[in-house]
Image (tube, rainbow, N blue to C red; front, side, top):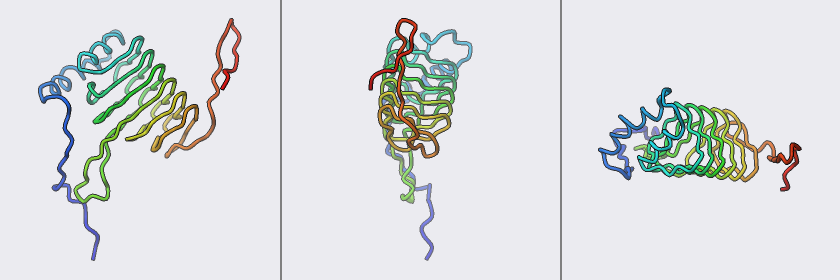
Length: 196
């Protein structure tokens, strides 16, 4: 007897957005195109636009052109965080960036997945948390339910399938530990290693 095949006609999403269809339509047809627009002159305008649609955006946040956010009302960004060009925050669930987080260009944050053991391919939604001082490098991917610890680094083109501890550097697909991050601090023109 052959195993059961996928039957996507049985798929019934239990997902419900926190906002009405009108708000979602306004975001997709007006807000999102403005956010992604190359002609928008400043990050402060992008931050105000995201706030208008319910995002929590701190002070001094840099948001580059081409950024895509599925649902701004599920996004929280701390102070002085940078979000690079063409970053895609595919947030069916909450995505939280702490303070001083660097999200490099072309990164992808995915909060939704499917139950591959379910014939109907049921939806699974889990949050993503990126703590203070972390760096998500260019073209990296962060998968549902992952927490990136304080000061941690996810290397370029890497895929985080599990949590990354504080001040750890992970690389590869799936990302694995390669080194510890040691910060340096500039004082009076001299670079000094930070105590850890």
